[in-house]
Amino acid sequence: MSMSDNRKVAFEIVYSLESQNVKYEEYKENVEMFFEERNIHGRATSKYIKDVVYGTKRHGKQIRKQIEECLSEKWSYDRVSKVNIVILEIAIFEMLYLNTPYKVVINEAVELAKEYSDTKAPSFINGVLASIVKRNEIDKKEEKDNNSAKKNQNNEDNKE
Image (cartoon, rainbow, N blue to C red; front, side):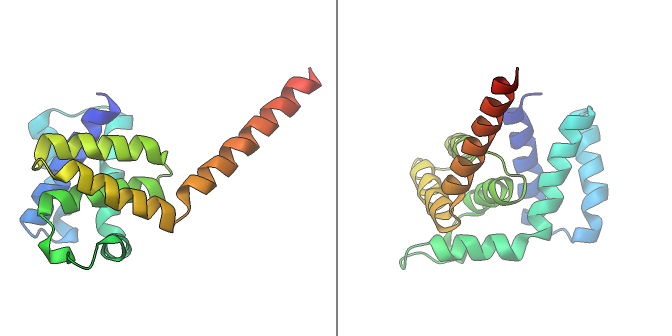
């Protein structure tokens, strides 16, 4: 499965669990059932999906706070559709806790919004996530990390 496919599966599981108000203690059983029904195998695939499913729940309060702080005065968290909330939760979790490059995360979140939400959702998702990138200085951190990696590579090249 591609990473895009993994994200779709993670989205479907998180959306299903949150829509049904499944308690965290019952997540494992539900996730395993979903894997069986979908015939999902593979260590990397199942690890990523489980990391996202459990991580969005474990860090839910911090993620919700991130979303609330980026909504305009016209919007409240409760007014945002469950589909869009789940897309945002997964994207924020990936950026803040899995350190997935923010450009990849935003692009994938917008694609999920195009597939699962209404026509206004992609620009809404893009705007909220762009605000989160700025608020958390994710772009600056990634740039710094990339510069450090290039510098290290240049040093290694010069040794040879």
